[in-house]
Image (tube, rainbow, N blue to C red):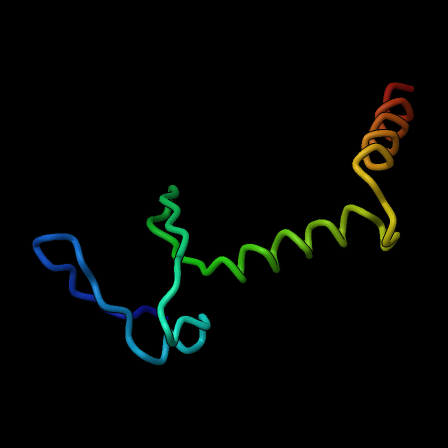
Length: 84
């Protein structure tokens, strides 16, 4: 689903109220803008944090005290197994 947004000559644009509400930006806030192969993507900081947390949960293998050192050790062990 797409939403048409008008961009003013000075580069300003207005996000519709329902979009701001879904993103938790009713009282203003910041968005991240990424330009990729298929166009632009806007995301809120909370969406980015949630994505990072989901990535951590996936890579930590469900161990809440999994540290960076644990992660690196596991990756080295995985790589050693792949060599043979």
